[in-house]
Length: 331
Ligand SMILES: NC(=O)c1ccc[n+]([C@@H]2O[C@H](COP(=O)([O-])OP(=O)(O)OC[C@H]3O[C@@H](n4cnc5c(N)ncnc54)[C@H](O)[C@@H]3O)[C@@H](O)[C@H]2O)c1
Image 1 (cartoon, rainbow, N blue to C red):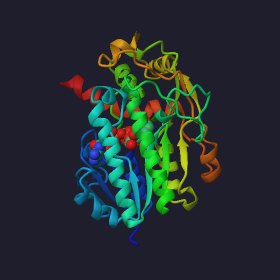
Image 2: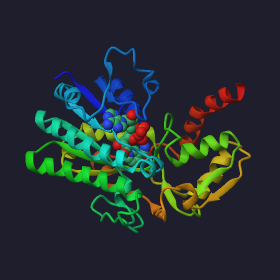
Image 3: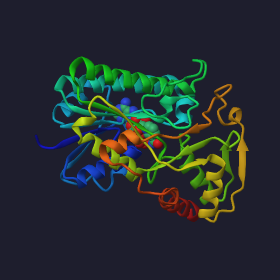
Image 4: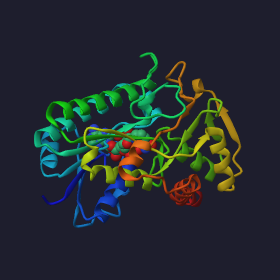
């Protein structure tokens, strides 16, 4: 055992922060990423580190993946197509990527019997109207004509596959359902609300709130998400289990837009954009009115309480986007 962690999708937002944490904890880290939405620059702090290696490749390429899984002690499977905009605009590619990628990674983890964490999402709860979601709550989806649910269904199938591997072969797999996670390096291109609002506010452009803005969410700072993910991976009692990882402060999207304007002293106005205009390729786009995690199960196992506030999150995203804005202004 040489204490090696493999992160698929490690050049993305969450994966790059997780890679830094694992290096800090003394692990060797290998990142496998096809750089479809991730960037080598996200790993700038690590590229020359002696315990770090980036492999550019696709998780569905078994020849590339198999030796990496074989030589890893822990696999973090984060590679996926992510973001409502991406899913709605490229439904087939996204769905196949999320189903096939997980199938292949789980097969390889089973082949070498490796500890594995599978990244899932709060989207799996779908339209369940509960005021907060616990891991054993029902998953409720809309019609298959609504592309948006394909992401949730693909991730739910990934979870079914993971749990079936645990039951059939004892694969030590855990599923983590991330609720909206935010921080530096998160892209504003694929429909992630907080980085989109922050970059609009920094440019004093209209902030585009979809629907009425009364839909509410919680947000989690990337450091809290990474901390919980890391500690779960190291905990043998987490095998075969599903965990929510999320924040506790609920806010409506319109209030979030106002808070970001105040915090960044922005002169942006707030525009309400109907879903039909925001997602032109999706007729009758459906959204969930609330999405709040119950994290009691996580807290019980690893004593998890979020350490960062929403203001910390806005500040760290703004710090990340501010130099871009200043460079753009200087051109
Ligand atoms: N960010 C969030 O708030 C959030 C919420 C819920 C779930 N998640 C899940 O967390 C994981 C990471 O999300 P993220 O926000 O860091 O997204 P991201 O887009 O920044 O990262 C995904 C990474 O996977 C890579 N990738 C995609 N397909 C690949 C493939 N076939 N082979 C190799 N690499 C591939 C991309 O290039 C990218 O670097 C995903 O599984 C996502 O579904 C994220």
